[in-house]
Structures are given as C-alpha cells and as structure tokens.
Length: 432
Image 1 (cartoon, rainbow, N blue to C red):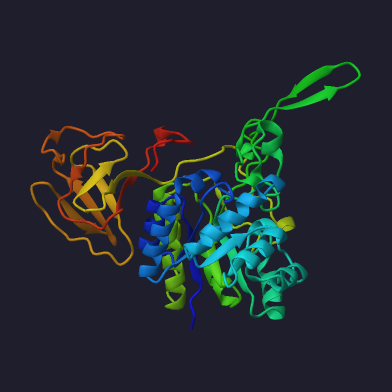
Image 2 (image 1 turned 60 degrees about the vertical axis):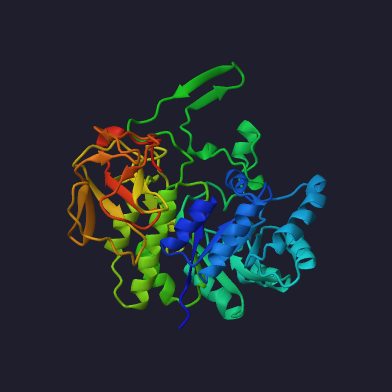
C-alpha cells in the first residue's frame, strides 16, 4: 500500500530540514520573485536550494520547486533562464500556475514532473483533464473543492495525482484570486506580495452622495470588524475521511512564511495522523493538542467535507490572530548540547520537550537539570542556567544570544515550550 504523501512548506533551508526531521515526505519551496511567496523566495539562494535538495534526496525525500507566480511580458526572458537554472538543480517537480508557464516548463525542462498550483482554481473534471493533457502530472486543487468532486476527478483521470490543502491560512477570495492588497497598497497577491489586507480591522461607513454626508456605522459590541478575515484550515480530525476516499495522493500544509515551530508542529501532527490511520489507531485529540499550540485565527474544517453554502463559521470576526495554547521558550541548536532562548526562562521552569518523531530523550537528573516523563510527554527543568561561556545566569530572555547548556544531548531543532500566559495578548510577536 502506498501511503499518502505529507507535503510541508519550507520558507528557509532551516525550515526545510525541520519539516523533514519532524515527518514530512516532501517540501515545497522557491527561489526569486517567480515563487508565489516573495519573502520566502528571497530566503533561499540557489546554493541553499541545491543544498536543500541534496539534504532531501539523501533521506529519500522530495523537494518541489515553486515557479507559480503570474509573470508579466517584460519578465518572460528572465523566467526562461530561471526555469533552466532550477531544472539543473534537479528538484522532484515544478509547481506552476498558468497554462503559458506550464508549456514553457514542458519545453525548457522536458521530463520534469509538473504540478499545477492551487492558483489555477481547478474545481472539476473538465479543467483537470485540460491541464493533464497539457502535461500536468498533479493537480493541487482549489481549497474550495469538495471530497465528492475529488472522487469524480480521480474516477475520470486515474493517472492524475491529486493534492489537497489540509492546514494553514485560508484566502478571502477563490484560492488567491484577490485584488484587495493591490488596491490598497499596490502589492499584488498573485505576484507573491500579498499584504494580507483581509486580516485588517475595518470601520464601516454609509455615504449620501447628494449631500456629501458620511455616517460611521457602529457595530454591535462583540461582533467585530474583521469582515474579511477567514479562519485557518485544520483538517487533522478529518484525515480518516480524506484517506478513506482513496483518491488523494498528497496532503499539503500551507505556510512558507510562518515560523520554524509551525513547520515542526504541523509536520509532526499530520505525520502522526497519517501513520495512525494506516495503523488503525486514529486519535484526533492527539493531533489537535499539537495544532492548538500554534497561533491561529481560529480553526475551521472549511469546504472539503462540507460545501461552502452549508457553512457559517469560517470567519474570525473578533480578532486577526490569537495565541495558541503554548509558547516556544527555546530551540535546541544543531549540535544538540545547548539551546537558544526564545522566551523568558528562569531556573526550575518546567518546559515540555517537542522533539522529532521517533527521537529518544534520555531521562537524566544532574547538576544542570533533569528530564522526566509525565502523561506520555517529556519535560525539562533546569537547575541552573549555565551559558556556553560558563557564566551562570539568573534569567534568560528572548533575543539573548548566549546558548544555554542542556542536561543531556537532544536532537537538533528540538523545541522547548511552556503554556501560554493569558496576558501575552492575541497577537504576540515573540513566537519562533
């Protein structure tokens, strides 16, 4: 039996490694402004991207290169050079969004698997068939599609791979077909520079053009004014239904510009959900425990299981972002003997250890600190905050660059977390 692929975002080389270490089978990432996430595209140099592909292939993993921006005529010459350069790095597929770029990739990189971006908004058999005939080996379907429609597409096109989003930010418009950001700030969503204007709080007015009178509308208290703010997608509890359908080849997590902790936690949660499904041990509470620890806009299962007209709870009207159940307090360095503080840490603070799946954390009790198990989780308490330079500190705060000694070696990129404090607010900026 072929397991469904778990596909994670990789906004940087570090996040690429973290996603793989925490369970992803493949990642998607890009270089330059031809990738639909300009910020994450700038984080990768061609050298870093090549290193990431090597890192993946040495572990039997895959990297899909995003070339899914919408190019202007003036950029076509540069785009052709970019396609050839990316093909030389030998990623496992290109992700593209338009028929023209699809054909260009087919001509300039023959033999390269081509995945059609969700930006193409494929919702039905007809569109899927056209793109498949044009050379697309996989369709990343629109977020608005239903599981029933996926079954219909697979029935007609059994050789076409289908990929669906299962977690991450949801767009106010049809999978990115939005111009609100362009209108307000000149940043074009389908060129990779969305300003997330739908997440802003808005005041509403009524105008009388005959008299020039402008009235501010007062909303009912508690209703909120985040009128375009969609909740975040979370389908972990529906993974059994998705995989029972037998038509999904890859489940995808959104979030190349999100934190390293997000990359780790989402990969871990969905890896557990997939593996537990095949082992017939599915337990959605276990996956939600991890996912609820992340900052989010409120969660929704959106439209894959239920049709859009059946839903009235997909908007977060009261806030743009809320704190998750946990806050990252530290990240273990690559050598595994020290961690960098990401939140205020004091001696004897209890921190939960979030390590890559399959990792073994040694249970110890020494002069530095102790590790211990409780309720199936591993915790760390430091008796002293011993910096790498041998200084003993009374406290360590976020931004402190002194690596702190661990009582035992841990896997690279292991995260240390504590319960979130309610006074931290709804939009903290100190998450990793």
